[in-house]
Length: 451
Image (tube, rainbow, N blue to C red; front, side):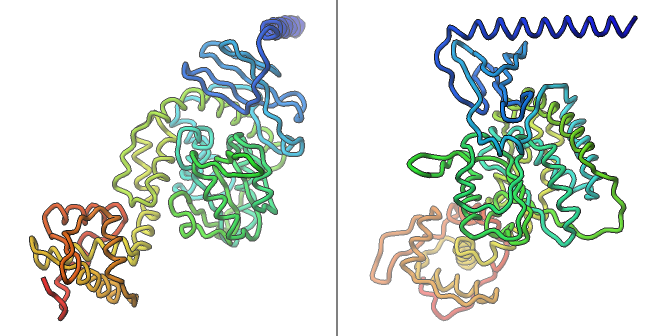
């Protein structure tokens, strides 16, 4: 008897849902031509999301107005119709889309759930799993960040790397697996869809890597065939040829797949479908609750080198309602920050600022010719195993770009007044660029000082 009652109740619910859909269709019939979209976020907090339909080739839209949810082929908000953006059918068949929304719990609980899943199924350590989990959450809030992070998977354990990519396909927002990607092929993808690009291939050309870097900036649009493409989205790149930390230090996190004796649980297609269905539904809820807070987030990343501050902000934005989780980003990116600082050791901007600081420590308050500062910089570089000559004219332009104001030129050239403000500017630059605020500050013994 209870089964009969359940069927009747389900039938009544289905009938009510059909009536609401019909009423909604009647309502929008009088509204103007639909706008095609892969998602909209309105000022009042309402959202339109691209979701899966009964058939993969026919996605639908989910309208959430803050109190009720409507899923339909066409939705209407504030007098305007919206319909799914056209996406090529073969892409739709591979694109991961949610089909419903269910509660995700707290941000901390959701993050922990993803961490545990990554650790158990892929065998990553706690830190790596935490970074991966934040990439997943960031993919759902990517509209709120200015630089989309890239997760770069390298190392000899190909099986585990492939498993991580497969898991991220289940977990990430609008994920689509790709291989054999070329610049032209990448530019052929649907614009403005906020894909999470899962790129697995042995090699990536320099041109493609530069294009991926450009696409990672939210406000940069790519010209293509007379139009502008918006290919902004999180990237997961499984390729040993990707120069993580070299071509894009400001946005990439590297996960190394080293062979392990640990036996991992099976990860069959049925398990993948189950994880996909559960976590995609929770990701919709997480996005609804947290996107506004992520857009308003004020995160102080000044402790990091300038090169990775945007990456730090993006990871912090993944947990916008939990300050303690945001604080963990400092430890999670400690190694990346140290590598960034060491990589700036011979950067000309860093060396120029250090030359100013050396000169100040040698003779505070005095004047020094730019040509002498250039020679100071050459000595600093020589101490670091780099032989380079600085043209005084170009060095003076570098100082100007760094915010130093030189005195009017005399017969020997331009001079810089070594004031306390100049010292403060040099120290701030070294902090921002990741140089050392105390390295090489002992007097540079030369025979060219002419102050």
